[in-house]
Length: 218
Image 1 (cartoon, rainbow, N blue to C red):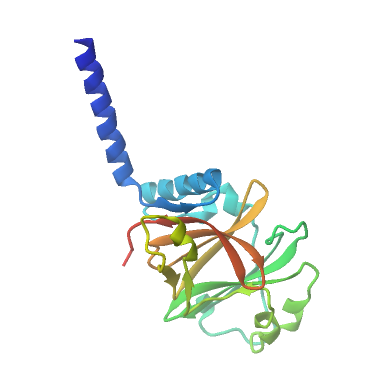
Image 2 (image 1 turned 45 degrees about the vertical axis):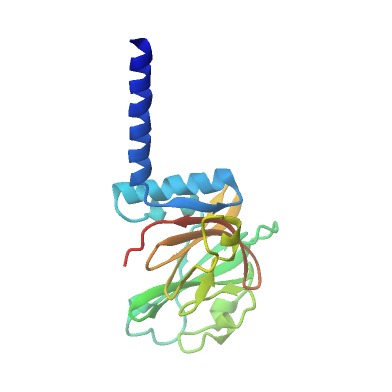
């Protein structure tokens, strides 16, 4: 009798576990940092379950990177939501020195796509730039700009169940955050089938740490 009851309980727990797993929006398909990847996965899946979308601004990890709006000299663009600039001071490359990070959100086919431009903390690049001339901003060698292009998920060859040629691209959603005083970048696109957690290194180079996969939104 007790053995049958125990078997029934174990079967029920197994069914519940499968049901819960089925409700997860994302799953880890590549991980180089178990604690980080599991922690971020929990945040994202909780948001998707409760709200149907990811609310970066409600999580402390993302709020630790404090953004300020940037106003440039010269006439402002007519379509304001297609020309958003923000700045923050953060040690984005984890070298012990904080940098000026400028985040731009410009439109591609009416959808805003994010890019990051990195400078020394005391740089006056924003004082020299204007709405009509952003050459100094765009010409920095330290940046992440892939709008209209793709970012290949090259670390998928480490995961036996993936083919290794998937990518995100077109319109990018980029959100730097801090986890245990280490800076990372969360990155996805409009489809949000894939989410990448990466470290910014230098130049245009990132080190991928986590890949999450869910269902495409379109």
